Image (cartoon, rainbow, N blue to C red; front, side, top):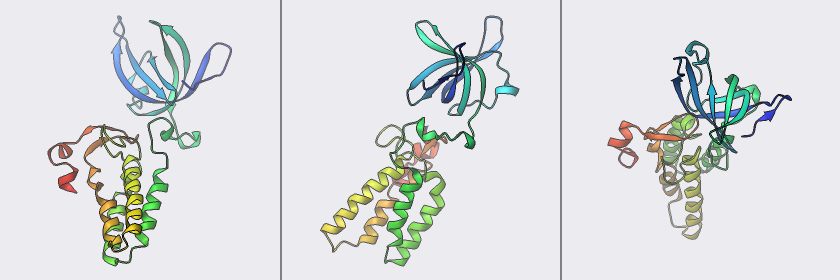
Length: 223
């Protein structure tokens, strides 16, 4: 884990994502929080003793935290005792993309690249249609994955997949100038838009499963 040692007593601190957590009880019946914390370097088991819901209830799965504590070896594996913890905030300057598998470009950059193509459409009706759909779904598109487990099942994967196919379509249009570019590009940009809502996705941009609608209907029918 990319934690920093802050004193001679072995105390460390750093930022991490909560991969899993469970409230358990000691042999004496005292609640504690059993966690798996992760960052770009790996993961570590952790314990937060004397857990109180009213104090630590903000800790949820996929929360981005700043933690302080000590690391020891338990059952031949490193384990962290968490002494202090809080949610990461904007002033910390940490990005969730650094803690989960993510597209190599930011969501904003990929979205802007697609919008630039749409703005060059000559067909006003298609331009209005595609821009309306993009604007309605922008917030989710910036982090939505393209799949639950298959291709581009990463943060920003939907935009990355869409932009990749769009670049291929642009190459095809250069080879075959008779192709109606606006129609081709519109189909590419919107072909997977119904994946938004198909998966259960947290703010991390990683899908944890399918929604009821995604299971019963799916993006192929909805889209």
